[in-house]
Image (cartoon, rainbow, N blue to C red; front, side):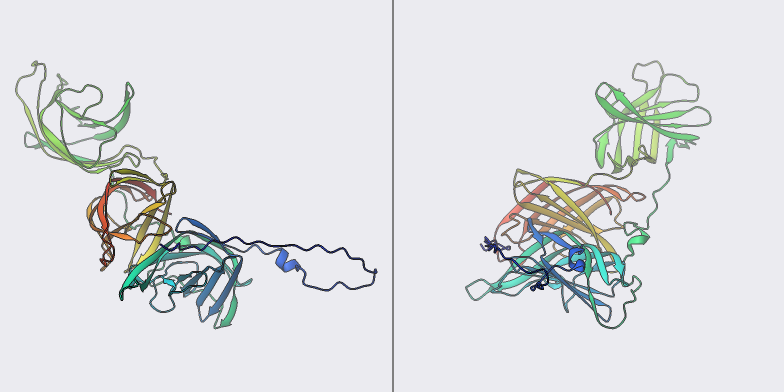
Length: 471
């Protein structure tokens, strides 16, 4: 299969001439000017895992539309089109004048960022200098093209462009004004916290009924205990009468339902109840807890619970019935930025991302979080995309965005040569979301296939786990 980046060997032969000249003899030829020597322009990216570095760039501003290109020594071209220029985040999926990647001496059409073909892309203008007419920012996109399959049909090919950076790219004003536009039509001003989902983290709270009577908590606190080599989160709700409930929650759990153990051994899930008389604690002989949110990094917990408590050593007679229990707690209130990570199993083999990129893409009147993990050791990638205002919970993974609420998964088994395989079906679980810091923990699994049916391969992605911090 054809490589997307055509490599070659460039041999440059330098001829050195010795010459002499009179003092007054003028020098002729092309020389580097002071302006050229001070050129700080940079235009780089990673295309299907391969480095791209532009040797020349162009920029034109026409009635608020920026046309910018970077061309490398091999003749490969990245062309970016940004409408309504300003310090904003832009969706690159335009049906007219789309952003594209052009292969050196192409025999087929260019790869284009068209949503109708499954393309996606985002550019962020971080600096717009209208006085010096330069622009700087970031970009990423997936570009698609349809080509002949040699048998009268067509197949879809793609390139994945990540880590795009352009710095101090000069542009020429062709027509219109240099004045920047305000961010609109889903654009996000980088200075206005583009990672803000607009959702506020809830305060800690506790509620339960004890034998049908409300447990009125005066304090609800968390602490992390070291029990041998294990970490356990202890939550304590205390009433004014000193009646209390204590939860011992092992680290490393996830969302889901778990049974309570009756006796705490230092590393298991247990709950204890002590009455206002301070007599021997009663523990759960039966009962369970369901974590709707469980953050090992964020420290956020949201759960419902119920249990029947008795004295495990028989000093206290009778039992206590606890029902309708619910709590919210952040046991790591100082948690902030988390490292971007991704791992999974693909057809039973390990996928460990050596690099993870997180970008924001304004789309469908919302903003999408785009997460791409690249395993450079095996030349594979996995990408996920979901709305920025997603709540902890379970969502279906699909092959495309139709209304602005869907979550998308895709897999590339060979970054240099292969096609994109989309989730059909799949599952995304947001296990925790610290909205104040933009830290998300999640899990995923999906079957990846070609939605167009040109390629018959299917890939099973299981046990996917990720953490990210929204930029």
